[in-house]
Image 1: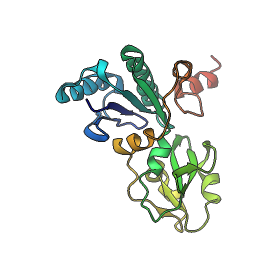
Image 2 (image 1 turned 90 degrees about the vertical axis):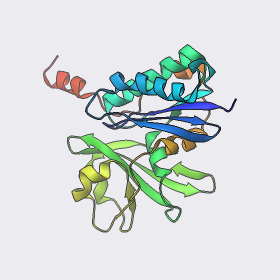
Image 3 (image 1 turned 30 degrees about the horizontal axis):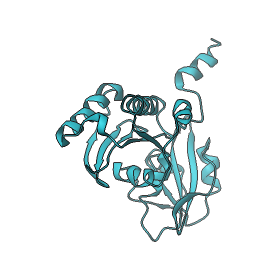
Image 4 (image 1 turned 120 degrees about the vertical axis):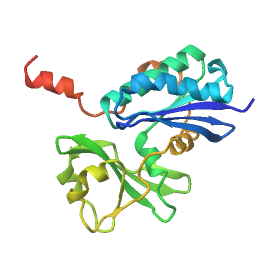
Length: 225
């Protein structure tokens, strides 16, 4: 039987999941952004497996987008992927969400800035460059004020990611916006195929890439709790 992979990407309010068989994505499901990911995720995954006649125990692996992005969405996606891997004994591959977004850039782009909304006037930001092996990170993932990030953008820079729509007014007019910036399951899958699966200790330690406390934790700090 061809290798089957489940793909989970829940970094945004509306998450996406998919099923790849034999090296190609055969099914995708968009999770309802008005509902909680943890309510829709398990039924969506089970439905895709049933539709393809694949038993969970026969999965080759699970790929999960690890962020940055929505704290709650990422937590649900990562915990669900770990539970699936533990229950079935399949492989688990952690895919940086920004690397998958960069993967969608057209071939004429050699460097790109990927951003996502970090709330309260902040952005998650990371630079990527294309070489003979594909896209490689050219800076560390960081969170910073959007004005600080935008001020150092060189003229003609390419920008992509979900943060573009949120902070478009702060992005200099001389910067170029990548049109195809809504993350697709297929991009997560292509990047995931290039990454090694986690070993057991790495699976136990896996956490979402989120560089700030959750909103609830920040509120507790402000209130002195």
